[in-house]
Image (tube, rainbow, N blue to C red):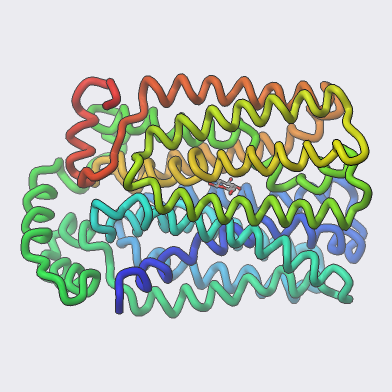
Length: 447
Ligand code: BGC
């Protein structure tokens, strides 16, 4: 099996993440009618998967450190399939809710485990691009959910298909994980050197792995006790990575991306686009921009580096949010309403070359192996929690402050994120995971 193929299977968790978070915005319109939901229950059906994701992220690290990345991903894909099928055949609301919780838990686990697994199997000079396969799949999954939602919107019981279709990539992931090897790093960390060698051989077919294998053995042997206690996640070598990881997790959400991903049609309609279907079409266009720019990021991250892309992306997000906010304050109409669509698309494009992929990439790179799973878990919990907070408060903020000031708040947050990145976030391009860990023990300054 060639490495790109292996990585494409391993990254499928990202597709489920994107599809399952995106699809509910279309499906809820019908679920609400079928089960006669009150607004509170409607909110619960949407939010319950995000809450499940927080729970999934909370346990994923400990499980992945203890049992290995592959087994946990295998079980997760089975949960994805079960959750998707259950919610699609639901005959009462409780079953929809149980199905969505299961899907949510699986999203939470795979959102951290997919980049972790990819980062540990990738050769260092390609790691940025390989780990970003995860973000590519997330954006592709979101786009797919928009398209499926649109195509099935006129079909009776279409919502069942919208939810149930998530089972397909889940099954592919399950079969794929039966075939893929465990992370060589995890195996060495658990004293299974022979298995690690075989795994590495499978990941580098036809290549001479001796140099890489010996370096891995040496680097990992030099690390701390592999069964590090929880205390170690918050102290010593792990403290700075934890601050960076959790900080970027929060910033990735409070700069407002999911107000656009989840509510774009509403935003476009209020900006003056003529009809709901044109707004949905514009949303699909924005989804496509997200995918295309993520591909651009995959190609550039290992050449240009993480820091410049993150910093330039943030500058772009700031400017476009400012424009968006002004558009709403001025109140555009007619053809000028399209300026809003362009500003939203440009904002998403800048997110897609910076904060989107770089957050998931960095949290897979900066933690010491001994606490990597748990460190990533904490960052991922923070990410999902703030995702939930921002999605919940967005509509209220719009009502109480207005759209213009709301987007101005997100613009201000991008400035904070810029300062945080400038002072704390290191460059990790071209360095092995073990070298990054050593670098982070040195003074805080970034390169
Ligand atoms: C974020 C998601 C977001 C997606 C959009 C991901 O990196 O974690 O919250 O919906 O990017 O592309």
